[in-house]
Amino acid sequence: MMDRISQRLSRQRIAHFYDGWLQRSYVHGKLASDPVYAATAEAIDGTALPLLDIGCGIGLLGLYLHTRGTLPRYLGLDHDERKIDAGMIAVRRAGLERVMELRTADAAAMPPVQGHVALLDMLHYLPQEAQQSLLEASVQHLAPAGVLVIRSVLLDSSWRFHATRAEEVWLRLSRRIRGGAQHYPKAAELRRPLEAAGLSVTIEPLFGSTPFNSYLIVARRRN
Image 1 (cartoon, helix red, strand yellow):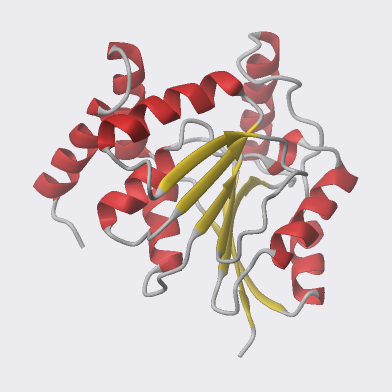
Image 2: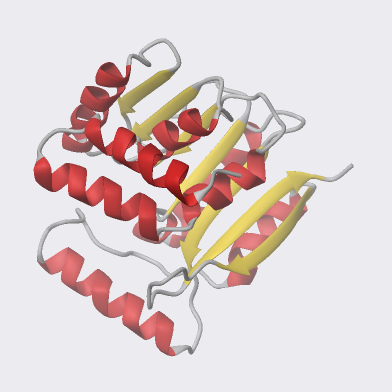
C-alpha cells in the first residue's frame, strides 16, 4: 500500500497527463476523494488480466490501475467522444498507447475481451431492461479468474438516495450527463442475475466523503 506522500505524488503525476488546469484539478481532486479507484484495485489484486471498463469517461481508472502496477491491459468504452478524446491525450502523454485503449462505443457494442469488467457509475443511466442485458453481457466477458466490479446508486428510502437523485436532476438540466438517470436499481435487481450466472456477489456501501448513495458490487465466479 502506498503511503500518503507516494499517493499524493501519484495523483499529481496522473493529473499532469490531462489537458488544462480545470481538468487536472478535477482529476487530482477525484483521485484524492473518491474511494472507487482503490476499491477496484483491491478487488482485482493478484490477477494479471485485462480490464474492460464500460462507461470509462476520461480513462482515469485505467491510468490509476496502471500506476498501481495491477493492470497489464486496459480497454475503455464510452459514448461521449469528448471524454474519449481527453482520455487519449492523457494516454499518449503517459506513453501507454500499447497497454491502454479508449474507444467511442455504446455499451452494447463490447469487443471480444476476456478478463475483468468494470461498470462504474453508469448503470442508472440505462433503462431497466438495458441494465439487465448489460449485466448478462458483462458476465460473458469475465475470464475464469475475472472480477466484475460495479459501483451503482441503489434505490432505497435513505436520505442519501434522495440527495443522489437531486444531484442527477441537476446533472441532466445542466447537460453534463446526456439523457440523465433512467432507472435506479434495487440491490436485488443487480444481485439476482449475477448469482443466477453462477457468481458470488458482495454488496457494500462505498459512500466515501460524499452524500451519495453509492454501493460497490463485486462479483466473482464461485470456486
